Length: 288
Image 1 (cartoon, rainbow, N blue to C red):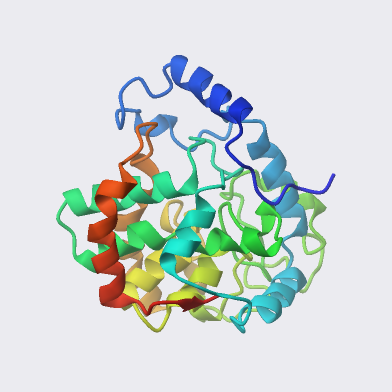
Image 2 (spheres, rainbow, N blue to C red):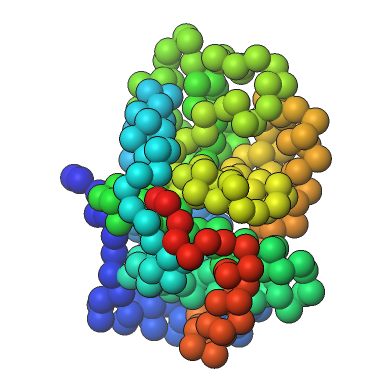
């Protein structure tokens, strides 16, 4: 079955969300135990397992090359940040086992948690922007080619990647060019030389790479690379600069993950602050 490109917040979906809350998965906003997040053994929604089955089957080295060639010219569309945010307001991430709120609410929850803790304003901006690359769904990409945990292609798949067993259906799994520890890469070549699975992280990095500080760009580019920043895998592909930047990605991750709650921030009240922040760092429109 062809995967759905986007999922609107239909009345049925909203009712499912209300039922989910009534089960006290989130009894108090922000109070969910950390061990209950990213629960892939018992995900809240059936779409999560189905999503990763397709993602791991189709995200091959050749597929990534094709998508980089297709999208990294950044000649599809010019959008303001607010236009992109408006689109994300219709999208629910099928790979996220934790919550069904739309993407704008997740971004605001993340950025507001960062701001509350007194981090630099560019760090707050990363919270608002980090999933903006999901506009790929606007161009007709299925969610398995946009969201979810990322991982290197062109080399062996770590068994620390979620739903690792689904890689058995990937054409690279038995390909001797790709299924060794280093695959097509040299030891400590640096992550910038590694072809990550295609999705919103890598795409948005290229959209924003001329505008934000280096730590911000690492947060954006590798925030879904859980096998690296959470499981400690793939250090053999990293150089010293990657290791220096790792702590920034790890500092961002708790805000991305643990700020999720069913209580939505008030976008209209917050919009003037974020308008000023966007104008400080970014042009009026971005090339997508």
